[in-house]
Length: 108
Image (cartoon, rainbow, N blue to C red; front, top):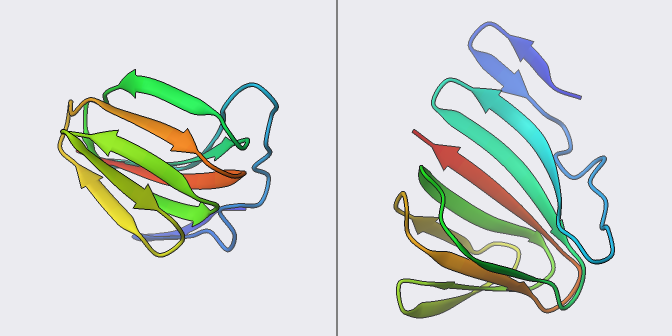
């Protein structure tokens, strides 16, 4: 549950309420405020999110699992602790090698 007081927002557990849905990606909006939006995507093992782009600067951080992100001619492995930044409109794809949760932060 989100708590906003003046200029701060606190979310004690961004994974709470996220579920893995067989055959599809589930997304949970965690935070939306001026200039930033945070979403958690859940993937079942083997799911591939085909190439697409985001209209804003994108930060990608694995919260659980193991994902491969292909972008700009490179492949990046995301595991908990890794962070990837993409400029707006950079085509990318995501493949989950195991059940995974991915935090996306859209800026701008």
